[in-house]
Length: 166
Image (cartoon, rainbow, N blue to C red; front, side, top):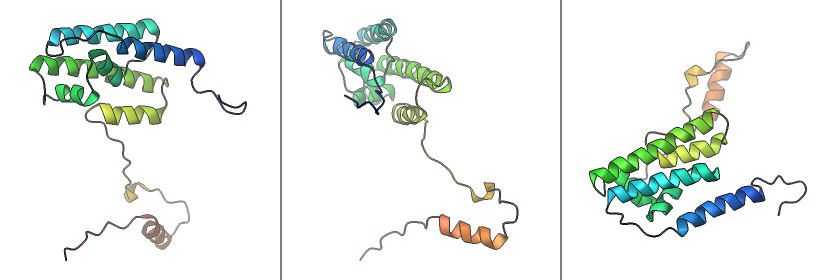
């Protein structure tokens, strides 16, 4: 329990809803995961349960509803494992989650750091890095070129040296 000074991040009601949703997935009867039609139906049922329960769909939730792990699901989506129909079904489900995540982020419904973490770890093409271009730096009025050079040299990390073979 949080103290009086700590903010309760998830209310008891929210936590109950999340747990109820996870337990629904846990108690689902197994399906024939080799049958893309059964997989597709189960994924659709998962999204419907999320809508009914007011829960945001997540990739792991999809996987748990199907009865597979996240790595297998991503292999399906990337065409490494499963049939072409598995790939299509997995890609469509991922694309739907990606669309929802973008909507949550652009409408301030999810913390940006959480959104970046989920986007870079679940969806292809998203990267989490900052590029620093010293040419974009706008010097303050009165800053000399020499002062800028010193600042650049002291704030730019040195490239890593490769270990030489003995």
